[in-house]
Amino acid sequence: MQYHQNGFRPGDPDISVTSEDHRARGDRLPDAVDVLIAGSGPAGLCLAAQLARVPKIHTMLVEPKLGPMEKGQADGISVRTMEMFQAFGFAEKVMRESMWINQTTFWAPGADVTLTRVARVQDVPDGTSEMPHVLINQARVHDMFLDIMRNSPQRLAPDYGWKVADLKVDPHATQYPVTVTLESTEPGREGQSTTVRANYVIGCDGARSGVRRAIGGQLHGDAAHQAWGVIDLLATTDFPDWRMKSFVRSPDDGILMVLPREGGHLVRLYVELDNLSEDERAADRGMNHDHIIAKAQRIFHPFKLDVKEVVWWSIYEIGHRLTDKFDDVPEVEVASRAPRVLLAGDACHTHSPKAGQGMNVSMGDTFNLGWKLISVLTGRADASLLHSYSGERRAAAKGLVDFDHKWSRVVGARGEEDTSDKLPRVARAFVDNLPFTCGLTIQYEPSALVGADTYQHLAKGFDMGMRFHSAPVIRLADARPLQLGHTIDADARFRLFIFAPAGDKGGAGGAVASLCEWLQFDPASALRRHTAKGEDLDAVIDTRAILQQAFDTLDFNAMPTLLRPPVGRFGLCDYEKVFCADLKRGEDVFDLRGIHRASGCVVIVRPDQYVGHILPLSARDELAAYFSGILRVRG
Image (tube, rainbow, N blue to C red; front, top):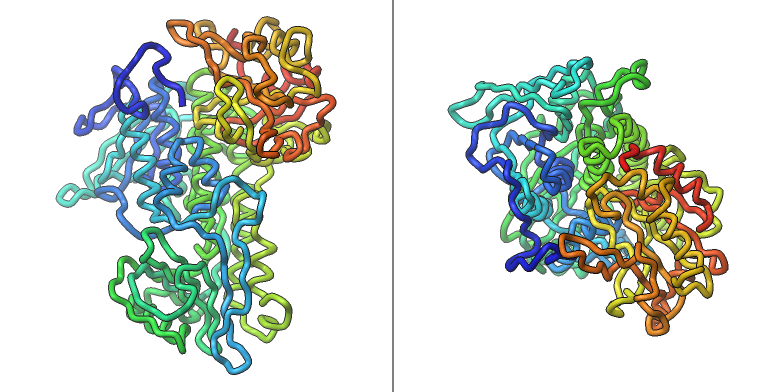
């Protein structure tokens, strides 16, 4: 994190200078906004936190509830989401507060029908990520996004007590084509309405989405007709793995999952309840938290469970559904019209919570969408870029629904095969599915945003279209060890990582210096073409280099000027763009990520941390073509 760039400013550097046109809390609702977000769940807040950082983008977030969430709902944070949190700046805070899941255990009836631990599995395989898999109250994740919003230039806060009742899109209008009817949910004002015009509306308003309904979308899928209970509680027990993530299958009463939570005492249980008939809903049974506890006690037998306090509970039915529309554009009009209304999170996909993916995939939706909206609204990209959101995230949502469909049936299955192998069936499936549950299987298809894999051999550990897998490096200027991926902030910029060939120390005449000179000065380069006059050279594409030598053998002042540029009104030097392999600890990024040592390469990383392209250092035309396919000419 850099600050003091334009002069010393005391206080918390996370609190931005207020923009002149921000809307103070309590002001009347605006007549028009750039983006109206419906719903302040994880998807809505993740998007709002990105948009709030851009002073020129006017954003409004409406929420039917009357205040922020305090407890309940989701709790699992995958390693991929933790990598995303790092880009927002609060991963360390989540790691400090949360419960780390290191091992998962599996319990089943033994030979004498008594519950026995039959397997133990490492929850995150070695080398998967520098981040842990953690559990934390969803409300705390909300709080951290809300902190970013309230400290942003816009001082953005949700407008509680409002829901989207309807919207209309004028496809011929160029400014504020969406007219949104908002309806009050505040006691005493129910039914009162107002209208707001918007350039874009993002429906993050859940499985019963009013935004989805307004654009004619529907969820399609099936239900397993099985009721489950979820309960957060404080209890005493003699069950040995109370602070481990555990799957417990009883001889006769079904299965439950133990999820230890933050704070050292809180625990969540997912408990299999009753089968439902074809047309029956869980609510029809009249079940409550007492039914969940009683069933859990039967499953745990002979272990004791003495509940001291119930913090939150819910009963749900397993359903797997996917929307038929991710935006408002009819398929026959895709070539002639860009989206104005888009859906994210549970408005697009519903599933069981047992795989711990719902909140993660929902935030992944809007992390994908956020930089695209910012690029369009700031004039960096054409509005047609927004078509890529539906294509990329529809595939991610379908993968989630298909996976959860299979996983739910594995978890609920009965039969002798559970103990017929070295691992029970559910444990085997758990191990096989770890890449998915870590959030690491999403791979975007080749497109304008993802290049062909022609040069994948130059960086075998950075899979094209998949998340950029971080690795340790040493920063040259101050010898600080850090993770290369942690240089990527949630700021809508592309990253261009130059991995130097063997022997190249960054000095004049080398391949790194030659590429940097072209990027900085040639009118045909991506930096010159897509950076507007008056912007810093790294405002759109942030260029950094990684050298193979030890940091104490290199001269920072010999680096190309693009890698030590003057920034801000004082022209201060940016010392944070050159890195070296971490030879002292033996964690060489070139080895870890399979970088071709002899030739090096360029790795382009999209603003959402996914690998966009891998190219040779000499591939000037291909480098320029990649960005020309996404960004407008502004230089």
